[in-house]
Length: 117
Image 1 (cartoon, rainbow, N blue to C red):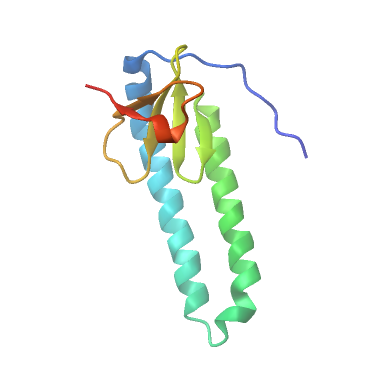
Image 2 (image 1 turned 180 degrees about the horizontal axis):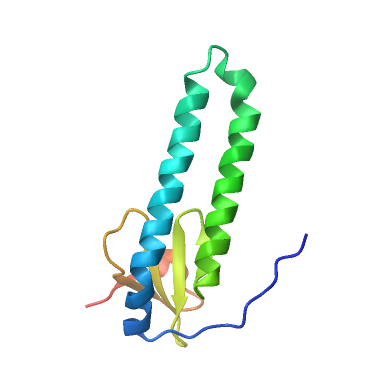
């Protein structure tokens, strides 16, 4: 199954801030769902026998989260890591950060994140 690519969206910082609460809330919900799946699997009498099903359930949650976040025009760069393309690089956020407070250039990646003043 191939993913349908949405047109690239360029965000001003204000536009990114407008979508940030939705991204933060979707992410927090997905994290809680993954934690619940892992907790339930760990409570089983034979947790190892439920490992594969738990991993599949978690992958489905992350995939659904990724599609929801991408539908807002954002780019998912990893589990709970989201970028907003600003035309010069990305505004960057990773759960559980409370604000959208970082930027990095296109070639810098996560390691090159700089705080937004």
